[in-house]
Structures are given as C-alpha cells and as structure tokens.
Length: 372
Image (cartoon, rainbow, N blue to C red; front, side, top):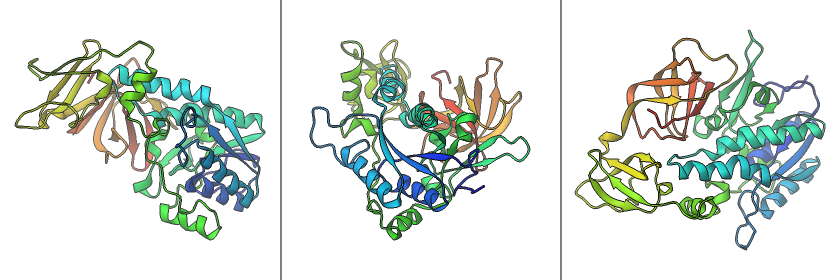
C-alpha cells in the first residue's frame, strides 16, 4: 500500500478527493498524491457567492479566478476536476453561526466550523458518493495511527509557524481516519518550490488571510446585515465597579481583549473584559484585569482517545497565534472540562477554541464558555 506524504494512508487504495482552493497549498497536496500513484478527483467548493451584486471580488476564496487556477492545476497534473455548490451547507454551518455568536457577545472561529462540518463533513459524504475513500486538503497538519489502539491521531505540522491543527480540533475519529494532509511535513518555502519546479501557475500566488466570506468588509457590518432581527440594540460601556463610561452601538462590535475602537477617553488605555449580550453591557478595564486563570469548555471533542475520567496535564492553546500554556484539564460529571492554567492568561475569549495538546499531538478541544 502506498503511503501518502505527510500521514498514514486511508483505508484502501481507492480514489481520493482533493479539496482545491486554487491556492498553492492544496495544489501541491494534489501534486504529491498524484506522484505517489493515487487516483484523484479535484474538487473546489462554491461556498459563498462573492460576485453577487459586486464586481471586484476576484483573487479570493470561491472566486471564479480561484476555480480557474484549481482547474488549470488539475489539467496540468492530470486528474478530473469539479466544482460543488455548497452555499447552503456553508451558510448554515458557518455564516449563520458566525452571526449568532457575535450577536450573543462571543467571538467565533469560522474556520473550525468549516473544517469539521463542511470540508470533512459534507464534502466527505459527497466524496464517498463519487467513489472516493477519503479527502485530502492543503492544511498544515499531520496524521498518524496509535500503535496500540489503532485509532487515528492528529499532530501539529512539522512547520510550527504554519501549523493549522488548532482549526482541526473538531474532527471526529471517523473523519480523521479518512483524511490526508500531504504537506504536513513541509515548510511553506518547500511547498512553493515544489509548485514552481512542477510549473504550476499558483507557485507565487499570495495567501488570503481574511475570513473568506467577509470580502474586505468589516465583520460588524456583515453581522448587522444578516442578523435575523431588525437591529442589534446598543448599550452601556462600564468599568468593573459598574460606572458608566460611555455607550456602544451593539455588542457585536466587540471582542474580549479589544483595545481600539472603544470610543473612550482617559489617561490609560481600556480593554474589553466581558460582554453581556443579555444586558447589552460591555465591561472594560486595565491591561492587568484581562488575565484569568481558568476557563470552561462545555462539550469538548476528543481525538484518538476516550474522554478522560480524571485530571490530566496538557498544553492549552486559546487562539490561533497563542503559544500555548501549561494547564490541568479537570473533567466534570456532565462531560465538560475545566481548564486551570499554571499562569494566568490574557484575554480568554468566549467563543474561541481551547485546544489541548500533549507534545505535538492534539488531544481534543472545544469552544470556550462565557462561564469562567
């Protein structure tokens, strides 16, 4: 059995669906699998119509230019290519959740929902209908198999700077078992070099760092436009003592840890400490007041192992660029986990993901509750 680059092989030697964004990472993922003799289908996902009512949206995820780039790579490497319309699935799983979370005073992680529910959920099911054994993506992550249990394990990418395992914590064992990450052992420079050597036109294509469906607009405007109610009411900005410092135009405009855009004057900078959507109150304080020693994850997902019955030590990452911090995971009888940090952490943000690591292995993770 041929082993794909960057991870264990999926069950069988059948066809693999490669999720192609039109960028260099997914293109090289397909290139590596093709060189190993795998039978491939390239699939781009139409998840959001950037062109609806607007003209200047090319060069971004789901744009006609991206689909053209993906098709050109598939034709050059030599495998069939299709575009699947998943606008309905994406709107339900990602955009609607994005709006609800901000309106509720939380800060969502749309990429995590897109991965677990769309790319490795809906796409995987459609790929099976096309006779595929699994899905490959251009994520910087790795997969292995536990030699004792035989269950799949999710690992950080070899290139820690590009690691995307944080956004994959929601994958189930079944999803991970049918997933491939061919570039997980490579650096970004190596990926671009491979694309250039193969004559792929996307070798120097820049990355899009924005949330794909915002298309350059600010997220508060997007939330307000799509919110089910007529408007998100404003409220008060207060300090820890409850003293009113100002007013705001909606809790969806704020996130814990935010400093800019508060509209507050004074001799010291203010930071958002808490957001109460029920009372429409935004609580602010000093930089020192941002630090907390614990958080709660109501429904964590565990990868490659059963939920722990007793406390265990882990490194916990509370946002994508957070370096991780030593903590104790304390399971509760209701299945939730209390995370207690050895050192207080800044801006623990409800709605963001807390991902648990042991060395390079992702143990699991979940979304941070507002009950800290």
